[in-house]
Image 1 (cartoon, rainbow, N blue to C red):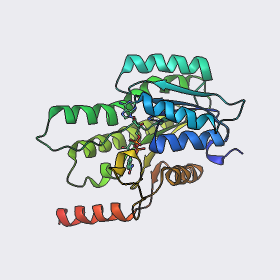
Image 2: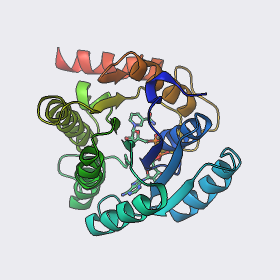
Image 3: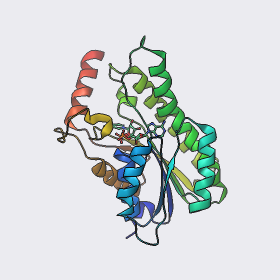
Image 4: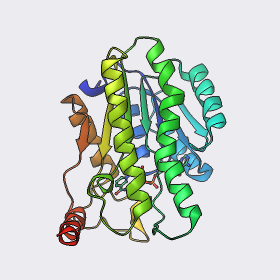
Length: 254
Ligand code: NAD
């Protein structure tokens, strides 16, 4: 039942785990036999997710849902203590909470604050709060941070999101270096760079899977394949929509 990517790992924490890619990861890791804690600020989604995941977890498996905002460091520290008591040592941390409300350079300050503090600040908080205990035990571990293609291609149209995800890339590269060079490499890092995934973040009223889009489950399966191969950059192949976005960027840059 164990997947080679996560074979020696038993306990996973997923930020933004109540929907979309995070929920798909929770579902998959439970199916693979791990104990899972999902952390999310949206209580309604958490309750729904918990109901669904209870149907997936076996009797002996632990499943926790914790309501917390990833921008709230004190809340996250409490959550980490709660999870440690319930699950024990954390082996897998997926920093995945994110929003994309849209932005412009001279738009509202609150747009910038929310996007940067959640998409980038949340990943920094999660890593810095859960990371030290993950390292302290000398056990194998994995920290997966969810970036975006937009953090790499930086297409025009949503600067706050691009900046936040470019920051996630820079942070995760630095994390990978420190884990490997200074911390003995037992805990590894990976940067998930999804393509266009059909989730609550992107559906915007649509119900059908758009051409070229991936489901969250496909994204998680692909992530596990790349993790097994030992990849740090988990760059999901382009969907049509992302390709179109890249072409626009190239035209714009020319
Ligand atoms: P989603 O909206 O379905 O899931 C995101 C989850 O994060 C939600 O449950 C939400 O409540 C939670 N969340 C948001 N802010 C939070 C906060 N402050 N504290 C705690 N939880 C919070 O979206 P998704 O598409 O599954 O996105 C997951 C990640 O993937 C995000 O980081 C997103 O930027 C990234 N991503 C998504 C796509 C895509 O096409 N869907 C593409 C590239 C990157």
